[in-house]
Image 1 (cartoon, rainbow, N blue to C red):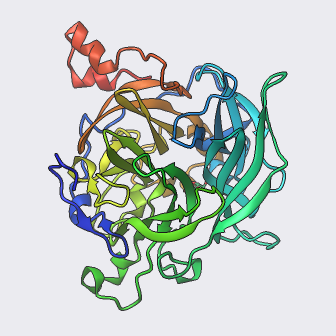
Image 2 (cartoon, rainbow, N blue to C red):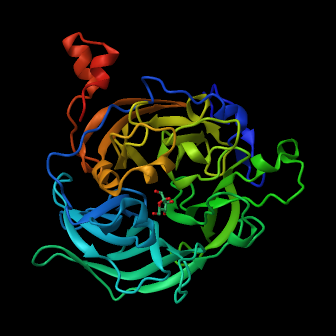
Image 3 (spheres, protein in one colour):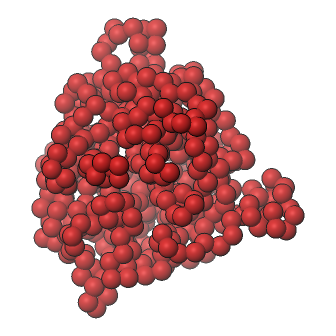
Length: 438
Ligand code: FRU
């Protein structure tokens, strides 16, 4: 148990730790967890493509890699003239590079022939000069129609070439790493839920043990007729989990699935893009989830949720009692999604993509009722402003924002936070803080 924890760990269903209905029942917007309104960026960094889920090239220990002065981001992308809702069907991983963490250049698609019908998220490792990209192969190659099977893949053989600008070159070899076994991790044909998941691999080296892991988003199978949550079949269909695989040798292409770290049976269907930030000897496990993926009887938001434990396997205690760490303001509930947290000095920074702004509805599904022009107009399709977070024990607090696409390296100074500025000028008003924009 986390030493100074005031929160309560709950047991999972197939995992050691769980996100319980009691925890999730406490989700509520506060000044500490609500981001200010975001506005579109002054300059569009990648005008030709929609950009959403993004991850950084990192060293084995999780530090943002610096390759001859360049930092590198990988993103899911699709042509900018595509209706945003269709982008998942053609998602392609592109890379972006930057020398200052503010201006980014589009390097183009990473792969010529990845596995799957389309490629979903994602993490990347820079190891001894070699680039590994872990991704989700969604859909079966060769099928006429789009399919929703998901496999976790590792691509090896990438190199950065920095003579004459920056580029990433192969030849890549694509290795299928993990498929769901149907026991720890649900297969698509077992799914009773709304959106099946087995995706989003995240490389993590445990600094306490030096052991190498891959986290991923999955679902825990709950047999039909089980008495879990009082036998409520409608609730049981919501069974998101954070999966875990271990590499016995440290080889980034050799994985053995283990029990999930955490699950949310009867709570939420999608624990997306799970990742860990190690801080003060603790393990902060973050996931993104949606308003519409909470089980019946629960109300949550599109938000970054988090849990903390004193070892990688837990027990995990939900942050801020409910798990809610950062969400969008009530009048722009879908302005950002797919948060990715990374440590920066005393803070944790949180990058996300700019999703549907100027859209205040009860569900993201209602986007499809807008005209196509309006769907295009209201979709950000670029990276959002980076959030600044303080993280102490089981408590977190949004301190302010950086710019869209701003990714500082660990040794780079940051300006005073919005909250520090307000303290200095004597203005502590909540309205002003929330009106500060980007
Ligand atoms: C989150 C997500 C990921 C998935 C991707 C597909 O934004 O659902 O879990 O890899 O989008 O586009």
